[in-house]
Length: 320
Figure 1 (cartoon, rainbow, N blue to C red):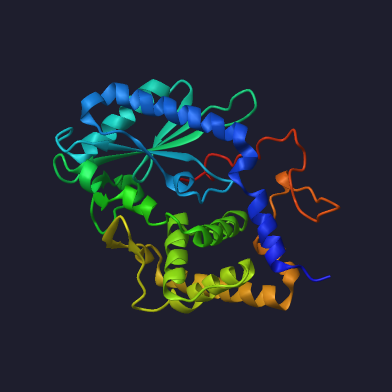
Figure 2: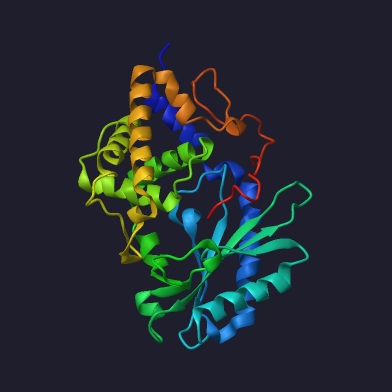
């Protein structure tokens, strides 16, 4: 019997909900709060209130791969240079947590991966240190400069990037249809080992909804977004402006061959799923940790009520 594509996608979203890992998520939130308080105690009046960011703050997180993010907005006169700020935050976090976690420099953030607890859970927190662009203006404009760690390559030959993380969060507010498609594309990316950045998938999904008349059931909407990606990503004039800084074109993070490859993948997915609806299960699999078919309703819930968390990917797989 043919697979009902929309019903399957609804089950995919249901089994990847963060609500299924509430106890694990509570551990993450407790660690995030602990790190926030440590930063506030150490830097005092050098910083504004740290904020939550990332996929969880945007309500696009999936329960098979996630971390929690903290943005620490420093005042303009707190450090002479962005590199000094970045290194100081790293040094502080390293000294505080070196005995209980791996603390590492990343491209624009500092990752803290706490040692596994008695349940085998590793808590992953990302800290982004930013310095306000204009003196005493952060609470008004939320503009920040971030240091770019040269170990991971420069952006446009710069050692910094201007952004507005609050604007990025606001960009997705109220976009519930877009969130569902973003989560599905992130599930595809994660379970099929694709390297595309989640932020890229987020922006291109939102742009598809802005530019096209997207309606119908869940499969219709997902297909429309995939068709938009297929038809537009390789165009010379195609852009994906970062809402945090319109001078940043996120489409430029892909090489031309990567754009062609993505277009072909979208085309093949659509064709393969339309030719055989069962193929949708390969591209968009159900999270089996939380699958249990209800014989009466044909719906999915938790496989085992005692399960509170999925297996967490290793340190190299987790993302922000």
